[in-house]
Length: 630
Ligand code: MG
Ligand code: MG
Image (tube, rainbow, N blue to C red; front, side, top):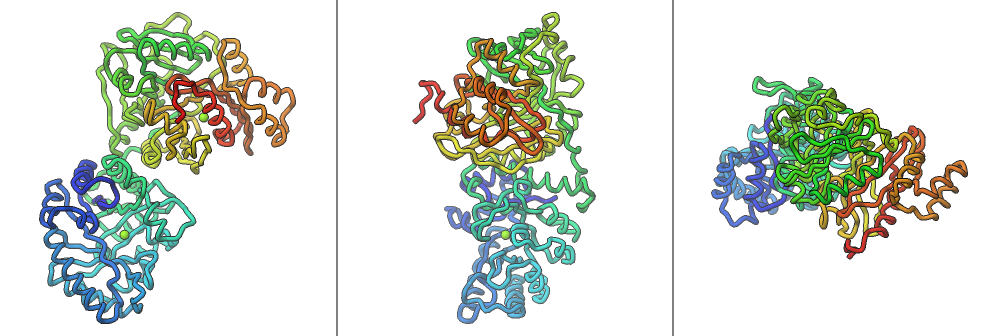
């Protein structure tokens, strides 16, 4: 697959863009005219820069309001084109995008447009370039690729072809199967973009909300399958206008772009719906099945390590052992494993230095860790290796949110062998009674608002997690966007939270404390009422939920009075859906904002979104005085 991206899709100045695009492995760029006009370099210099970066320019764009004009505007449009062709020759590209006219002066008429394009094709032939015609979704007369194709067909000029753009076709609900009857040599380039479903005018939707294939709701894979059916072997070029990407990390957006194309094409390959050329790599390994979180690792120093240990002990974890060669403690409860890493060097220490006490790694239980790693690398994840001591288990790992690690733990290792290999274990460590905690129910990672789409694509493409519809949760300091992703059997749930408002707890966690990372972990209890009693007996302070909440709960649900009384007394939150009931308690946050949640599910599928605003308001009131509240 030949991949390209338009310079307009990412932030930075032209040279930053080009190096990020090349580093992400693209073969080409589209030069967006504004990026060229804003550059202080000549067309020849820009062309050289692109080639020096190891890229080619597959398209120069856009050329607007060309076809169907009366004189004298028609003559002027041709003169404009002549100049652009000169620029293209200096840049070193042979293809220009002509998008369908939105000019109020345009007269319409398929044959008139075809004649104009044929004449332009002749001019292009003389200049040694080609013209690709694109139907803008909001074009005045031409706004459907089927009409654009009819015009190109009638123009019947070897230097005139079609530009397909998934957004323009799919945003108007045009069936992509109509592409299958277009000859591949008349498709000069294919532009790819996805977008969330929004009820917005087409132009604003396109200019601000396009995103990478797999990040939105449009049937981009169907579109690509139709293009593949023609035998097309040219560039798939991302043309993404997105406010967050323009403000986001240049390097990350470029990687995401390439990941999105690899992911979409891989889905087609796996389904046998892609053209397989002789040089095409075979599909990536299918997403390895995960069965949830195997362990959680905290980075700490000696003092904060004691605080984390005390927190764990207070919720029923027992100290199970000490690492044979490192300053690392293992805590266990049933099948749950938590590691506190206080090493003065190595990855965890670096993480502690940068982020303070934080969850520096998660172990994910994988049915096939080798395939999971191969897939992750194929999707441009960054692998991580750290030397293990003699006889110690070493697991493959990739970088996750905020530079943290995701260890890929083979299922057979999750419960016993790895711990026995690496730790001096206390006798009977697995038998101690705890507080009824069974598993990690979900992990909530707080990220920068503009990075939510990026991490959504990461988890979706590499681990096959399904994003649920995103929610907006009110925090006293502003709105928080919350994106839940889960695997097929809900054994792994990741929540991505991010906020544009600087005063929310989420935004402050990122800007003032840990940075992007795990803000809370929810453990699942077999009986949250019993767990709450154990915690209270252990002297744990639970988040005190306002009595107003329970008065309201009483009016919304029929809950047995003694159950409601127990909830009021301990601060248990409640929700219910078609599938069942949900109970939640929250512990007071550690310095820095990390906190623990404990939940009980009785069939319930969600994450208690209805209670999030109550929790956030209460946590904001509870925030210690040394945490500035603005
Ligand atoms: Mg386009
Ligand atoms: Mg939660």
